[in-house]
Length: 352
Image (tube, rainbow, N blue to C red; front, side):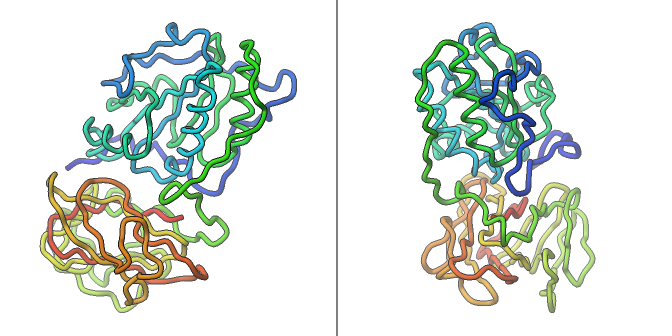
């Protein structure tokens, strides 16, 4: 497996508490300036849910362009709003165009993207941007990122990252009104669940952490990380906050940590309500059982949507798995996941 095409050194997920990078509040006269033209989508390698779309063909419609990659928890937490906007304002002239620009190698696979789009209820058109050509045409740098174009094809608003949903929706309404539509000013209400629930920003102290040696931080094993070779890693006596360690027979590659024998574990000392892990079987079609503990005990009361009431689950596809959602006070704890078989690729921890 490979990860991305090398761009990740300058790409980033838009992280942190909700904030505006849109600079201007909609609703006042003249506050949605022209920022450029709607860029073409002709660099897309394929499309889901639609024939290829063009700026010329979209003229007369307000267009929301949403850059995403399906493992990105920051995008997942914005998705309930994008879905609702796509449904509510379609008859008023809004077209939502998702641009799936992959971060990890398995996200280049159209079948994987189509399956996850179906799981998440993404029914609007999606441009598959495997070559980063649409990303480059928009000069984009973030997942998630939203760009709004008016009915004349002019970019009038953008926002990077989570949050500012009311601001974005008011911008949609303003551009629809400019195009001659009368829209209900009430804002959508969403009911997110699982990975789509907003982070608990007040208690979150753990950052996104990659496990491949190209980008990893906080490696807390008592042994030195051995690049691209199988090593038997020992259990650390302790882990500091935001440090992680492999236990068992692992090979740390540039893009991921790979488990080569049964009963390997990953440990992480964290503080967050949620623990998520981007992972999957190294070979498609594999099924690998796992179990999750917190501070050495099965995470029964605090299991996530991808673990059952016994804090166990099965790894059967490459995606983001929610492993812990705490129900009590959020304090520093030690998370461990044990895989009962080898053949695991683990890419990145995220928290919420």
